[in-house]
Image (cartoon, rainbow, N blue to C red; front, top):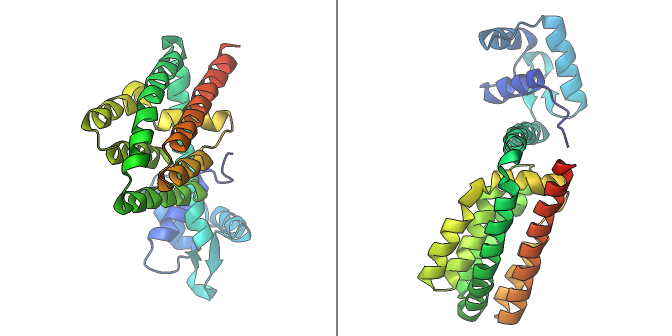
Length: 241
């Protein structure tokens, strides 16, 4: 979903965030002019009123306004959206190169490897490994709640499973495949466009690993990878229409 901030709103919020204390209208006019944004004090007043109504800033009497926690999250969401939008545009430019078909091939290879890493990880999982996976998943969920990209922790989660398998060859193979075809954030664009979140899949995988359930872990990984392949295929079908 597009954030309810335009570029100027975000600049205003970032100026208030970076200030040493409450910031007033005139100071914001000067800050925006320094950034190449010509804006009147009246316009700034209207922007601040709107941002205050949204709960992104709050007044401090005659001293000016400060950023709220909600405003900080709004900045993060706007940045994440801009990043996703850039990657979406990059992805659409690459459609003719059949990059999505390449994604499917990489995913099929990952599925074959990750079935085995999941099985071995469930058999060999240590308490330290469990805690590491839990920490990664909690970070992923926190980033998702803030509207930030979870691409890096997505890769980290699967890499940690490969490490827990105690098979260095499988770990190396996963590392190669995970980065092929510019997956990660571009992949996240595909997932967002077909509206199919995958954090629950990671939670299911983690629970099977913690139970030392090899068959359950393999089944969860297979469902997860099949879902990813289905999402890429759906997106590919849409853009070809």
